[in-house]
Image 1 (cartoon, rainbow, N blue to C red):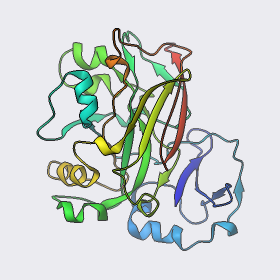
Image 2 (image 1 turned 45 degrees about the vertical axis):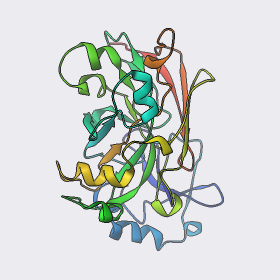
Image 3 (image 1 turned 60 degrees about the vertical axis):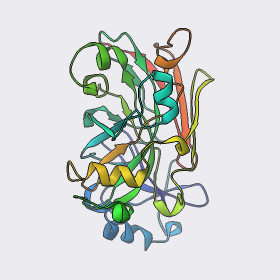
Length: 283
């Protein structure tokens, strides 16, 4: 299944992408795409319904974040061997965990706003894991039992805040609008091998990132198991799993940073595409 949320901010309706390309309203089946709705029991309620029997929604409406009220927004840093190489960083011995503020979450095509005092805003196309079942000290063999689906994430970053302002990475990652997710939550039955997905990102039509999940250092199963050793994972949590090479800070001979008016266009095989216009901060 491909699930999405359609409508103005705060007024989104849960929906399913039907095989005929229409968006079908799930409001009569589930109240939202969050929390317990993402558990195996909640998803089975959606699977039991024939999408053709549901009302059609206007495809011209805004698409919201594919998960409502994200619980935790967890990220894995330097998780692609080729991205680590472009930054000059050593391959991590264990996954690097940091957090994005949930207030960063926006829809896949909403505007990205460069924060006040930003110097080095950057982009990162990433595979997102959406948790559908509580996970605590999970073995790798059982990790997939806890995955509700996958989505596209743009881990927008401010590198000056991230690496030059002291402390952890979080302050350069959690700015408002720095977490576009969606367009869809795609269930695992549609993505039989999450470790073999092409992924790309363009800015103003120039392709900077052109990678594959094949080069991930720690795979989906390892990440879910590993993170669950340090914190419980709840339905509606999102884990962003790292980015391939081609980020702005890695461009030679000079880094390339986002500017107002830029348009980011990105996607992952089987998971859909995003498009964001970059705007300047206005008080």
